[in-house]
Image 1: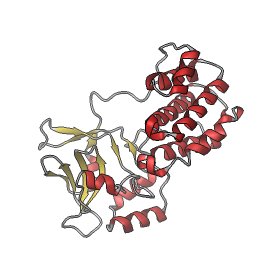
Image 2 (image 1 turned 90 degrees about the vertical axis):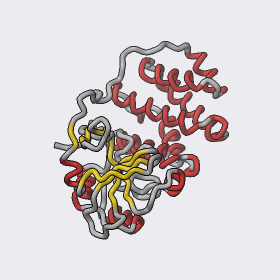
Image 3 (image 1 turned 135 degrees about the horizontal axis):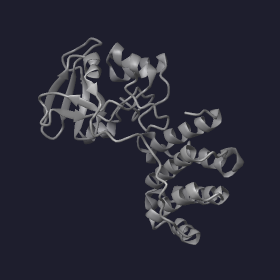
Length: 284
């Protein structure tokens, strides 16, 4: 049984792993990754976990929740290849390989006093400087993951939508000031309305405006929301995106999104994932 949800549009799921990617990551990190971790990443290269509960008597509640595992990225900022900015911001040591983290707390492979390919795993609290050894190796760590009792169900799209007037959304998109209407409004028309020509035209024009003045619009956040709306449409509606000429230009823009503005290549990677999905016509 896979420990991952298997969701294709999972934000933490990276491209399928290759030997070249493994070698490059190990060279960059200056470590030998555990064979058990590499084999798991070959099955799925990172992603959200089905088994989110990790029990350990040293934790206050007797367990911690681990939502995902990082995969093996191809460049800085992807998966375990933590970018230099994040390392500086949170004082992350190069002696660890980080498999999960939320800034203040991390799960990591501990290479501080280890030179082999099967290091122990530790829980790191950045604020208190506490380091708790939680497993002797990656195999033990994975074997102790179980289902969290209150775990939420897999993604479902609600059928209850707030209604919007089309002219209000056009005004919000043109001015770029009401971010709620920009995102929630497009979500409404993308899922409810049959006029997707209007929907894609409005989205494309909005993205162009934001990319011209991205710092004013805080564009990466809104654009990420737009991509999530497209994913909603894929999940909810049987739409042939080839019927809409705007989509080619839209994905051309987003797959070439400025790297300096794209935190952890979020926009580019999500756009490429959607584009590949649509090109293959796969049902997942």
